[in-house]
Amino acid sequence: MDLSWMAWTWPTAIFFMVIASLLITFTILAIKFPETPRTGILRIETTRGDRLFITLLGSAFINLAWLGLVGAEFQPYALIVCAIYAAAVFRWV
Image (cartoon, rainbow, N blue to C red; front, side, top):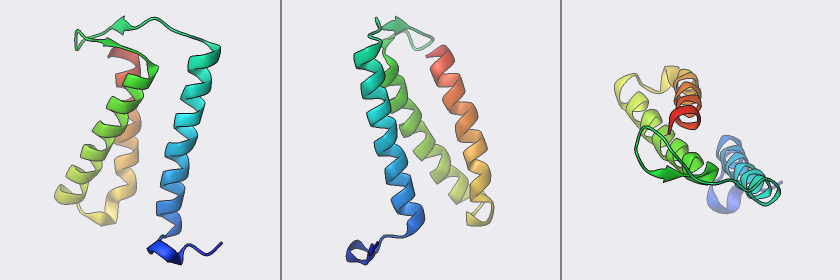
C-alpha cells in the first residue's frame, strides 16, 4: 500500500483507521441500541457519541501535554493515561 501521496506513516494511518472504526462502531451501536441521554458530573445531557467526542478531545490534549512535559521518548505511556481518562469519561460524564 503506497501511502507516500501525503507523507503518511503507518502509525498515522493506524490512528485514523482506529478513529474511523470507532465512529462506525458507535454508529452501529446507536442504531441497534438507541439510548436516552444521561446527565453526569458535567450536568449536561450526553450520549455515547458525546462521551466519545469528549474522550477523543481530552486524549488529544493529554498527549500534547505529555509530549511537551515529558517528551517523545515516553509517549506510549500517555496511552495508559488516556485509557484511564476514557474509562472515567464513559463512567461518570
